[in-house]
View 1 (cartoon, rainbow, N blue to C red):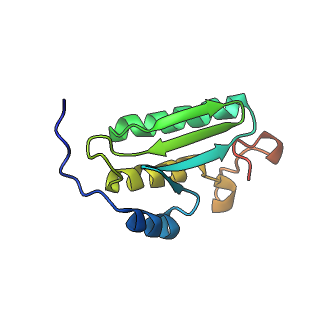
View 2 (spheres, one colour; view 1 turned 120 degrees about the vertical axis):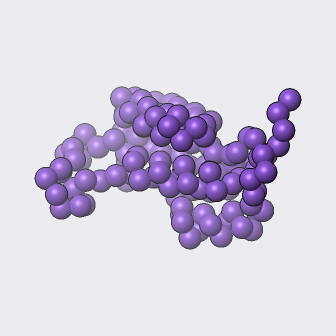
Length: 122
């Protein structure tokens, strides 16, 4: 049995405040923070799962992921600390940055796919 991490865990009110300020698309669900991405197809679902999986592995902080035909649910909780910590908020922010990225909005050379081929439903 592993020892509990010494990382600070946040209480319900603190988590709610941080989600409202930093991650408004995420919600507190029991003992984790959660977001469901609605995708446009099974291929899009797999792309989102792979992106989240890559970020989680390089961060060494692993979420629970539920994938279905047109959605991906990501649940974050620091199991070692037995609560929600800065790691959860930081990984959620990085997931948002990658999964919700819209290159067309940046005005650069990358335009993103046509709407009919979008990955995430908006």
